[in-house]
Length: 179
Image (cartoon, rainbow, N blue to C red; front, side):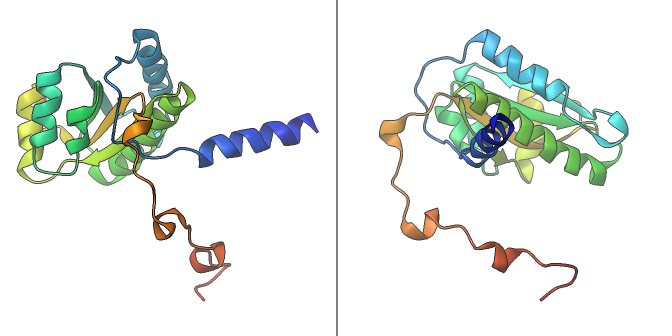
Protein backbone atom coordinates (compact mmCIF):
# COMPACT_ATOMS: atom_id res chain seq x y z
CA UNK A 1 0.00 0.00 0.00
CA UNK A 2 2.84 2.42 0.81
CA UNK A 3 4.45 1.94 -2.60
CA UNK A 4 1.11 2.57 -4.34
CA UNK A 5 0.53 5.76 -2.33
CA UNK A 6 4.06 6.94 -3.02
CA UNK A 7 3.62 6.34 -6.75
CA UNK A 8 0.28 8.16 -6.73
CA UNK A 9 1.88 11.11 -4.93
CA UNK A 10 4.69 11.30 -7.48
CA UNK A 11 2.31 11.12 -10.43
CA UNK A 12 0.11 13.77 -8.83
CA UNK A 13 3.16 16.01 -8.35
CA UNK A 14 4.16 15.63 -12.02
CA UNK A 15 0.63 16.36 -13.21
CA UNK A 16 0.39 19.48 -11.02
CA UNK A 17 3.21 21.36 -12.77
CA UNK A 18 1.70 24.41 -14.47
CA UNK A 19 3.05 27.47 -16.22
CA UNK A 20 3.22 30.48 -13.91
CA UNK A 21 3.63 33.90 -15.50
CA UNK A 22 2.63 36.16 -12.58
CA UNK A 23 4.97 36.26 -9.63
CA UNK A 24 5.16 37.81 -6.19
CA UNK A 25 8.21 40.08 -5.81
CA UNK A 26 9.79 37.85 -3.11
CA UNK A 27 13.26 36.67 -4.08
CA UNK A 28 13.93 32.96 -4.48
CA UNK A 29 16.32 32.02 -1.65
CA UNK A 30 19.86 31.05 -2.58
CA UNK A 31 19.55 27.55 -1.13
CA UNK A 32 16.48 26.91 -3.32
CA UNK A 33 18.35 28.16 -6.42
CA UNK A 34 21.30 25.94 -5.47
CA UNK A 35 18.99 22.95 -5.17
CA UNK A 36 17.43 23.67 -8.59
CA UNK A 37 20.89 24.01 -10.16
CA UNK A 38 22.04 20.75 -8.56
CA UNK A 39 19.07 18.94 -10.13
CA UNK A 40 19.96 20.61 -13.45
CA UNK A 41 23.54 19.40 -13.11
CA UNK A 42 22.30 15.83 -12.80
CA UNK A 43 19.97 16.05 -15.81
CA UNK A 44 20.64 13.45 -18.46
CA UNK A 45 22.06 14.23 -21.88
CA UNK A 46 23.12 12.28 -24.96
CA UNK A 47 26.39 10.49 -24.18
CA UNK A 48 26.43 12.44 -20.89
CA UNK A 49 27.94 15.39 -22.79
CA UNK A 50 26.07 17.98 -20.70
CA UNK A 51 26.19 20.44 -23.61
CA UNK A 52 24.87 23.41 -21.67
CA UNK A 53 25.73 26.41 -19.63
CA UNK A 54 23.17 27.86 -17.26
CA UNK A 55 22.84 31.61 -16.80
CA UNK A 56 21.13 32.72 -13.59
CA UNK A 57 19.72 36.25 -13.75
CA UNK A 58 18.43 38.18 -10.74
CA UNK A 59 19.02 41.81 -11.75
CA UNK A 60 15.75 43.55 -12.62
CA UNK A 61 17.30 45.56 -15.46
CA UNK A 62 18.64 42.43 -17.15
CA UNK A 63 15.37 40.50 -16.70
CA UNK A 64 13.46 43.42 -18.23
CA UNK A 65 15.88 43.60 -21.16
CA UNK A 66 15.59 39.84 -21.77
CA UNK A 67 11.79 40.09 -21.63
CA UNK A 68 11.94 42.65 -24.43
CA UNK A 69 14.01 40.62 -26.92
CA UNK A 70 12.30 38.98 -29.88
CA UNK A 71 10.51 35.85 -28.78
CA UNK A 72 8.12 34.57 -26.19
CA UNK A 73 9.76 35.24 -22.84
CA UNK A 74 8.09 38.49 -21.80
CA UNK A 75 7.09 36.85 -18.49
CA UNK A 76 10.70 37.42 -17.38
CA UNK A 77 9.74 41.06 -16.76
CA UNK A 78 7.69 40.11 -13.71
CA UNK A 79 9.92 37.34 -12.39
CA UNK A 80 12.40 37.74 -9.55
CA UNK A 81 14.65 35.13 -11.18
CA UNK A 82 15.41 33.99 -14.69
CA UNK A 83 17.45 31.17 -16.14
CA UNK A 84 18.74 31.19 -19.71
CA UNK A 85 20.12 28.01 -21.22
CA UNK A 86 23.14 28.30 -23.48
CA UNK A 87 23.84 25.23 -25.58
CA UNK A 88 27.33 24.42 -26.84
CA UNK A 89 26.18 24.11 -30.45
CA UNK A 90 28.39 21.21 -31.52
CA UNK A 91 25.46 18.84 -32.20
CA UNK A 92 22.42 21.13 -32.49
CA UNK A 93 19.80 18.45 -33.19
CA UNK A 94 20.73 16.28 -30.20
CA UNK A 95 21.23 19.34 -28.03
CA UNK A 96 17.67 20.50 -28.70
CA UNK A 97 16.41 17.30 -27.12
CA UNK A 98 18.79 17.66 -24.15
CA UNK A 99 17.77 21.30 -23.74
CA UNK A 100 14.12 20.31 -23.36
CA UNK A 101 15.00 17.67 -20.79
CA UNK A 102 17.07 20.19 -18.84
CA UNK A 103 14.35 22.85 -18.90
CA UNK A 104 11.70 20.44 -17.63
CA UNK A 105 13.97 19.24 -14.82
CA UNK A 106 14.63 22.84 -13.74
CA UNK A 107 10.90 23.52 -13.70
CA UNK A 108 10.12 20.36 -11.71
CA UNK A 109 12.88 21.08 -9.17
CA UNK A 110 11.49 24.60 -8.73
CA UNK A 111 7.97 23.19 -8.36
CA UNK A 112 9.20 20.87 -5.59
CA UNK A 113 10.11 24.03 -3.65
CA UNK A 114 6.80 25.76 -4.38
CA UNK A 115 8.47 28.02 -6.95
CA UNK A 116 6.48 28.62 -10.12
CA UNK A 117 8.01 28.80 -13.56
CA UNK A 118 7.30 29.33 -17.20
CA UNK A 119 9.39 28.44 -20.21
CA UNK A 120 9.96 30.94 -23.00
CA UNK A 121 11.47 30.74 -26.45
CA UNK A 122 13.90 33.33 -27.77
CA UNK A 123 13.81 33.69 -31.56
CA UNK A 124 15.33 35.64 -34.45
CA UNK A 125 17.35 38.71 -33.50
CA UNK A 126 16.45 38.02 -29.87
CA UNK A 127 19.06 35.28 -29.78
CA UNK A 128 21.92 37.61 -30.65
CA UNK A 129 20.52 40.30 -28.33
CA UNK A 130 20.47 37.77 -25.49
CA UNK A 131 24.04 36.75 -26.21
CA UNK A 132 25.08 40.41 -26.12
CA UNK A 133 23.21 41.07 -22.86
CA UNK A 134 24.75 38.07 -21.11
CA UNK A 135 28.18 38.03 -22.78
CA UNK A 136 27.58 34.62 -24.34
CA UNK A 137 30.06 33.63 -27.08
CA UNK A 138 28.64 33.76 -30.63
CA UNK A 139 29.05 30.03 -31.29
CA UNK A 140 26.66 29.13 -28.45
CA UNK A 141 22.96 28.55 -29.14
CA UNK A 142 20.46 30.46 -27.03
CA UNK A 143 16.76 29.62 -27.27
CA UNK A 144 15.31 28.86 -23.85
CA UNK A 145 14.54 31.22 -20.99
CA UNK A 146 12.76 30.18 -17.82
CA UNK A 147 11.11 32.64 -15.44
CA UNK A 148 10.96 31.59 -11.80
CA UNK A 149 9.34 32.95 -8.67
CA UNK A 150 6.62 32.39 -6.14
CA UNK A 151 3.22 32.40 -7.85
CA UNK A 152 1.01 35.45 -7.43
CA UNK A 153 -2.25 33.61 -6.93
CA UNK A 154 -4.23 36.88 -6.91
CA UNK A 155 -3.16 37.55 -10.52
CA UNK A 156 -4.05 34.07 -11.70
CA UNK A 157 -6.65 34.12 -14.44
CA UNK A 158 -9.43 31.61 -14.26
CA UNK A 159 -9.13 29.07 -17.04
CA UNK A 160 -11.88 28.58 -19.52
CA UNK A 161 -13.37 25.12 -19.67
CA UNK A 162 -11.63 24.58 -23.03
CA UNK A 163 -8.30 25.66 -21.51
CA UNK A 164 -8.61 23.17 -18.66
CA UNK A 165 -9.65 20.19 -20.70
CA UNK A 166 -7.08 17.70 -21.81
CA UNK A 167 -7.59 15.61 -24.88
CA UNK A 168 -8.55 12.05 -24.05
CA UNK A 169 -5.81 9.49 -24.50
CA UNK A 170 -7.80 7.95 -27.34
CA UNK A 171 -7.14 11.12 -29.39
CA UNK A 172 -3.39 11.23 -28.83
CA UNK A 173 -2.19 7.66 -28.34
CA UNK A 174 -1.80 5.11 -31.11
CA UNK A 175 -1.03 1.46 -30.41
CA UNK A 176 1.48 0.03 -32.87
CA UNK A 177 0.22 2.04 -35.88
CA UNK A 178 -1.63 5.23 -36.71
CA UNK A 179 -5.40 5.02 -36.46
